[in-house]
Image 1: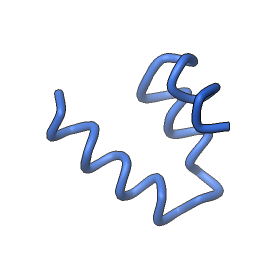
Image 2: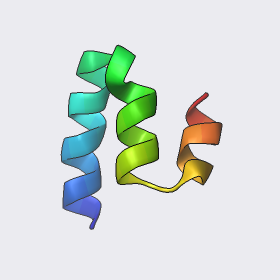
Image 3: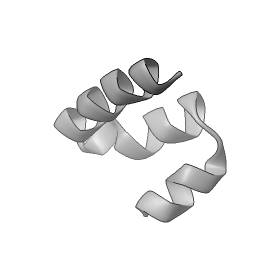
Length: 36
């Protein structure tokens, strides 16, 4: 899980715009709220 999160985090940060969508779709809404 940690490895997958790391890969997603990098891609998400790179995209920026898709960051919220990726976080909400991939992870729970809790991490998204913390990011936002």
